[in-house]
Image (cartoon, rainbow, N blue to C red; front, side):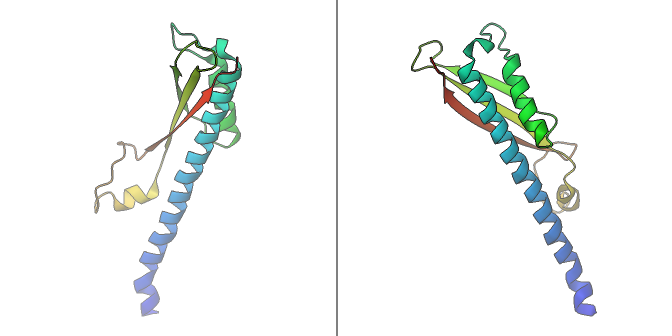
Length: 135
């Protein structure tokens, strides 16, 4: 009983850390897939991107749909054209960013160690995908 009482906090910390890391890795995989979907959509529909405003509504919709199908609701997008408008050498870079909220482990370890997160215990996660625009 004494050994169990001494080891229980460490075991609980190990389990909680594993769950939190799994959430972060799952989110990273989901937004990578969303960025890939957005880059694919934009590479096959290059007229969706407005050079003046930087808006790509169809691409954003494709990204949001892919992320929400996996349970990630709040994502933001940044589109960067590379070698714009030179067919055959024109590619787009899509960056998708989200945050993993309510990290339990940060609240437990925040006072003991230096952990860099925002003030609301959210960890920013982003993924970038580059694709060649189809002529």
